[in-house]
Amino acid sequence: MADLTRGARRGLLIILSSPSGAGKSSLARALREWDPTIRFSVSATTRAPRTGEQDGREYHFVSHEDFEAMVARGEMLEHARVFGNLYGTPRAPVEAAMAAGQDTLFDIDWQGGQQIKESALGHDVVSLFILPPSIEALETRLRARGQDSEEVIRARMEKSLAEISHWAEYDHVLVNDDLATCAEQVKTIVAAERLRRGRQPWLRDFVRALGEEKEERA
Image (cartoon, rainbow, N blue to C red; front, side, top):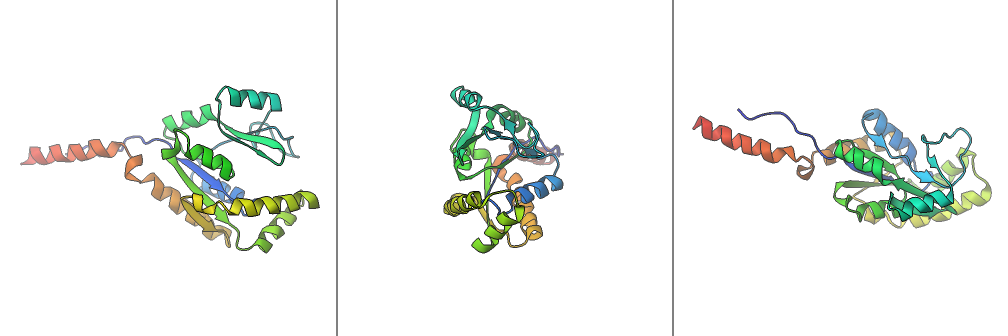
């Protein structure tokens, strides 16, 4: 009888992008509540911590000099400048998670997503882009945060339009007009991507064992 043991798979790199205010942080939280084994990639940044943020939880807060040194040493999987600050993904934790079969979730913009897709790890990526139901709704959400000045909100709205222009570069595109519905769609996509034949290396041996079982029964 064929061995029914399911072997380990490589970890999946889940890229979740959207214009600011479209709900990707809430969707990322819902995805990790659905499956707590999904590891959240904590980015490094040169911006100052906001009230309530902790180093190593929301971000790894580093100086410009340290960030640039990490890039020079090849320790960043991706990096970009956003609103005058540097953001990037440390490479080592991602590679360790993949080797252990653990999925990693990235809350990054199109620039970072593109860099990861073009890297040696690109074949392990599934990318999702979240669209707002309207530009008006996007601006309303940004203002409801109560965190940013009028100048920052205008800058974020301009960046949002530029971000939306890259929607076609993603594997899956969803409209977040209802958070609960959109969250279920994200979960469905992740579950299906995990089952792709190429992400289940144990299948080859399993099918071979089925053939051997058939020969034994002949």
